[in-house]
Figure 1: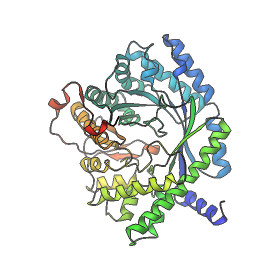
Figure 2: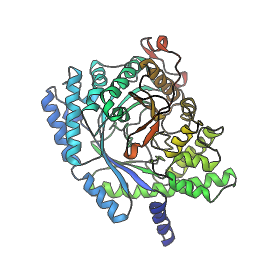
Figure 3: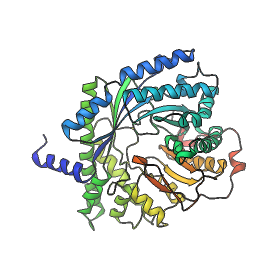
Figure 4: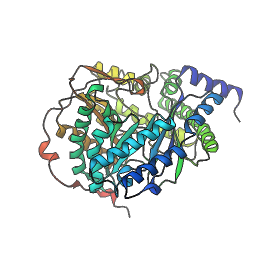
Length: 454
């Protein structure tokens, strides 16, 4: 049972330490919408989403009001559209029509984002999936709520370098198509290795084919809560440090479990997973970088940062899994640049560079996230950065991702403002030495030897 002290502690975490439920995400399977007629397919998609998710926002708002727990976003994820549109889409423009249908459905039900304009091409692309990737720039330029992702690698299958080469151009073209909004379209496009089927966080959410017809996934967040807890154990041993993080992660996850169960019951939709990630916001005091500073490094990026992040990530998982039987998604610590004020300050101080961020991604939840780079960066350089990050995920059997934003018209040292949860970011330098001869090779990088576990 929850006693009065625990209740008071939860209230303090919400009102003073930025504890929130970052998202309730309804996953919706579109497999039964498939048709070879594009207009019929779009009608089926719109009808199913607006039917299944019609009460999602209302229920989320009711739970937030009744329990006093902020629920920041209500979102939808759908089956990868590269699969759903395969029999009806003969060209990229056909996929753009589906994207507009998804956008209309998201607007109708009132959600913040809809994810699943996606392709899973870790071993090779079908023509339909290639068409979807080529449609991404136009689709993201012409929609407001749709998010896209492409899974280009896995530990079991290797890395599809043809897809990575295509995505270098796709990301740059997306930046150009949304130049009037500081290339904001790229903030809604993620490239994955080992993408999970049940991720509730945008922009990389999609409803995997292993999932049921509908499901409720919840993502919790609480960097400010963890930082405040660690302030009380400054100078203590690593044992005390770890125990404090674990206990705090347990409490945060229990809040998410409560919300997930209530949402599942009221919507009549099965509960899927809790994603217990520490996902920061631009708000002061809601930063993963500030946790690393509290652990003992001057800035994120200083010597010791990767070890501190590894410790944090592991203890968050250990505490969270005791609070919920169904932990999934990404679960750990996110290290986006634009969405984390402490990360922004580390970049501005010269303590943090892309190469150090890449090292940190070996032990964090995701990867190179929300990083603004010069708008004149070459497509092959973008592809090379993606390939490096995918290799980390493949070899280490973990999820890694890249969300780069080449800001057209801006260079190193300038800043870009995205607004809201996306925050703002300094434009970071990239290594200018070339990798064209590597990226131009066709085919795929084979899976590592430890993938053969049949």
